[in-house]
Image 1: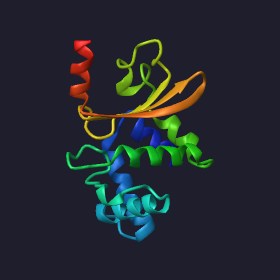
Image 2 (image 1 turned 90 degrees about the vertical axis):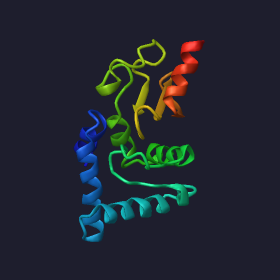
Image 3 (image 1 turned 135 degrees about the vertical axis):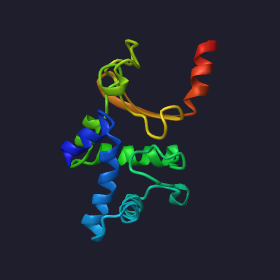
Length: 159
């Protein structure tokens, strides 16, 4: 699984992401459908006590569907869970592209303060959301979740 998640996250392989959801359905529920896979994901979110699951919506495994929805509070809960997981944490965070260095982020985050210090996943539509995990003074310090990146760019351009 650690090799699969690297293929999904670093080069952002959307087909693999969709297939992992179906595989979860097959392994856990003996049904290789997307519905079975999303049920497994929802059950896992319930198990780790992610907040406000009634608002969570998953329509594909890649995050490209316009109707996918996860709240920042839910995403931060998942990231916190992964950070604290001795079994999954290191594998997961090493699978995320590094700002200014890898994958689709190679040309982004080129500032001295961000280059190599931000592990990032674009999440839902590159134009609408960006989830960052930020390193400061050799320790992971926080997570930012931006919605509507077009608005963020307009604000940045004016300043």
